[in-house]
Each structure stands twice: as structure tokens, then as C-alpha cells.
Image (cartoon, rainbow, N blue to C red):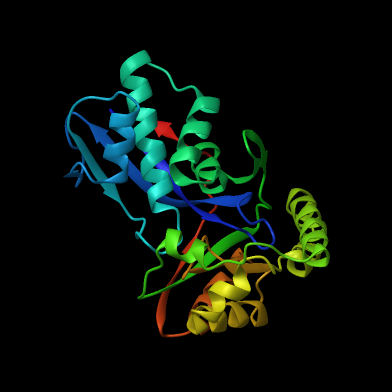
Length: 268
């Protein structure tokens, strides 16, 4: 069987560890025999580890367009695929609540795996999830520099606490941002897709990403954010303006125009 899972871009604006979008960069995991250009995985691959952790047996092969270490949910998609494949092998079905919980535990947070499991835009809090329909006119432009980010070390650099004012402002922004995405209010999306919890620290360590974020907002993006822990920058933009934005992003990285993946995990 082949289990296909989309990439994700998490930490949308103030939605740190809780708001993410699924992207049409697939991770394909084959059990038993390879399909297409899939190659055999070793025991250290996150898909293999989660497959074994879920009780799966047999060789695994993978084919993907998701770049690792770039903030586009590579490890999350791989872990979701491995756990789902093990569940299908054992019982013939996927228990989605259990898949969300276990993949979130392996990742250390559930926002990116929720988007990969369910598709579209997802808001999560512990084991609660709400799936939002993204405004249909929006694409996602991603700017991907050459460097990589180690998520664990990046998280260790974040402040242990924030002021009451910063916390309440983040709550207000994230509430309005979710409502704006659900209602298609692009002006409110742009106004509230701002973060003071993790982006200042991470962007200070990646000035090229900070510049790409600035360029995106100056050239028609409805919202822009540091994707995951970076260094990729992602932006919602009207599909008619996506190519123009892609062309003006810094030449120190490469950019792609992606569709929001409307569906999550798929089995064939």
C-alpha cells in the first residue's frame, strides 16, 4: 500500500504551536514494495521509527518533494505516514484521534501533524482540532533558503516566559486571524498575522528570512509568517498575484507557488 501525506506550514502568525496549513507537497510512503521512484528507508528515518513504534512490520520505501529541515513539516508528515501505515497493517483502518495524539507526541506539538492528517487549515489545542476552509482564491508562496533549521535547538532559544501584555495581544490576534481565515477577510488576516512569541528570536538569527518576510508583505501578501521554525517564509497571496510575488523574493533562496492541500492523509 501507499500512504500519502501533505506537507505543512505551521505557526501561522500568532498561532504558535496551534495553527497550520496543509500544502500540496506530498510525502509518499510505500509498505512492502516500492512504487514510482520510492527508495528504501533505513531504521533512522522518522517514518520508519514511527512505523515500528506503531507495531508495523516489513520494509518501507519513500518518495517526497518535502525538503527536510526547512520548516515545511517533513518529519511530521513522515511520522504521520508511518503511524498510519502501521495502523492499517494491524487493523485495516486509521483511528484519527489516536493518530493525532501519537504523532503529536512524537513531534512534541500537534499543529503541523494536524494539517498533514486533515488537510486545509487546522487549529489545534491538545487533542481538540477544528478544520477551516481556506479562502479559495489564495495560494501559498514559500521562499526557501539554502540553510536548515534544527527545530529542537531553535525551540531552546525561545524565551521561557512573556509579559501579560504580549500574551493577551497574541490571544487577540490569533482569535481574529482564525475568524478572518474562516470568513475570507483578507484585510483582517494581514493585520493579525503578526507574532511576538517566537518570530523575533528566530528571525534575528536568520536575517535573510526576515528580509523575505518583509518583501512578501510589501508585495501583495495577505499574510506572511516564518514557516514552522524556519528558515522558510510562507505567505498567503491571491493566486493572480502569486507569480509576481515569487519573482521579487530574495535571490538568496528559491521560491515555489503551492496550493493549499484540501485533504489530508490518503491511502492507495
